Image (cartoon, rainbow, N blue to C red; front, side, top):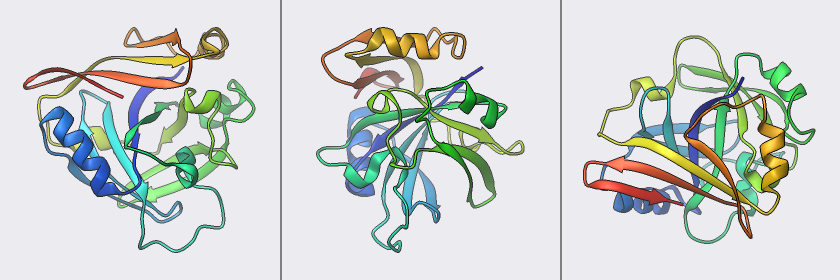
Length: 205
């Protein structure tokens, strides 16, 4: 089974992504870190037990990568936006077998004392234009959400719009059972997150 793990805001620069989220939600993001294997860096926001928001961008100080970066960041353009989401799994290899064939291959990753395995597509592009989740298997008890400051933000729900919504729902059937996640029809892929903040509910997309 898949468990909602985190939401991904992509940006051309980390500062630009952080400004977008902090202005929208009215709360500060916490420091994340660097992903040496991907040449990216991030900042994070607690969204409730076991769930967080990640703002991620290419790290301009990192060397050129020999492979495509995750979340299709090599091709990202435009304003910061919610481009992807990730689901936690207990057995990454089994989850890959149950997912669309282009969900990616396992990669071992590390950031500080965090250890995890993630399915990373060879071209960086997750199935259904990024509407299918990135699959992550955390190693050990450490998880980012549990060490982030609680700034009174909670994920209330998210809508994933896609022209092939019925196919996406079918691909997730039997894998994800979370009332917060709704797959809906739409002219293009778009993810909308409903987040309760200290100042009220905000829709982040």
